[in-house]
Image 1: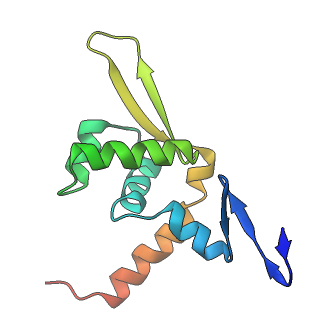
Image 2 (image 1 turned 90 degrees about the horizontal axis):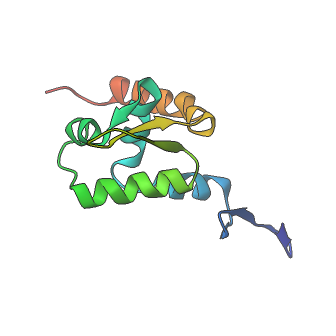
Length: 115
């Protein structure tokens, strides 16, 4: 879509002037990229994600998971057991984030100092 000479990118009913802006909005927040990174490696339950992501509250984790599910980056599977078991897994669309997240991790390893 264009407006005058300006290209507009649309995703989930939101408009962006730049595709990088849309990407950053999708991964916004302190935790989303980290959650996706771990879900790329294995399916996880809510409590497992909470242990992997230090300092995240249940409320914030629930919000991030819901948003990532709406954006089709992850899927939520409820198993018909007592008590109910819920697992989160990465979607095909979410898997496409492996390469850029891997690049960022390698960049950090090369450029950040270890204590």
